[in-house]
Image (cartoon, rainbow, N blue to C red; front, top):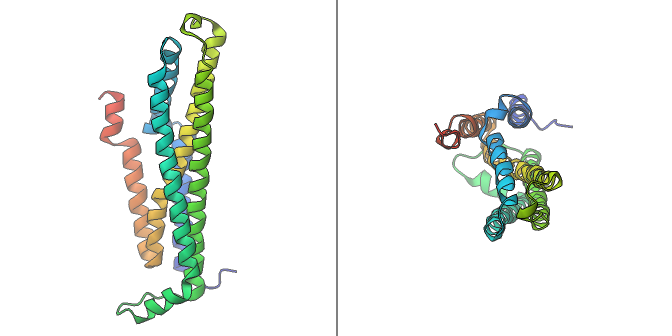
Length: 228
């Protein structure tokens, strides 16, 4: 089935998938990930909803939520454009192969290998679009539930607090899907190295992984959130 892949290509691809899946698992499901930037912000999502419950006027909360929705919509549109570009790249395989053959430093590739790489890129951008699209939908649900938040005079009612906490949980899920979509975009940058060759693929994947790891667990932004 994968006869057109070299052993080095397969090793690079397996390393790429292992890096993506492993990083996601550490960030989202381990105790170590709980100290990361994404997890720490979940605390502030809950704090925001608790304070919104005590506010009489919530127009500012709605404005902030709108800005978050707009940011998610931007990334969804961007990933859709990137998906269209990848599909166009797949359709123009003949022209691309002709162009590559005339280059002074022609890349060592075959039509099957090039198409397989491009299909992989299409899958990554499709996944990113799905995640951003679902995140946008979840933000809509958050806005609806925020609009149904009980009045400030009821803030001491256990049911009112329960409603605010449910908003926070839904808010957290919206952020998680957004992070997954953004993660796909970042790893797509590493994936582009494969079009040069498997060694470049390994290097670009490692660079993306290091950059994401540092920003999540050892960045100035993390220290600012912690107050260090």
